[in-house]
Length: 119
Image (cartoon, rainbow, N blue to C red; front, side, top):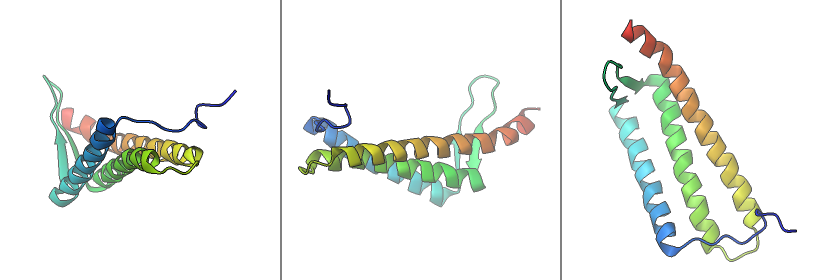
């Protein structure tokens, strides 16, 4: 029985284009965040705003870049005709996990600042 990681990757051409465009969008957003120096997520109702700046912004930018790399890996795997899907999928999983951990760490860095602002 073949594992799903050994199967050749197939994505529709529209999905490949959308992955590429969204990856470029994530890179553009990361560059915007880096050059402006802060990103503000608006709070709703009585919640205060979440402002990424300084160290948390660096982790958020790194997370966005790794997220775009994950999208690019999927497109590259589709167009690469060699039989090495397992390598692309494993690298994609590591990159996706690293991106999620970096974003989580960026949020963890911001929550103490958020609780000080709300009190």
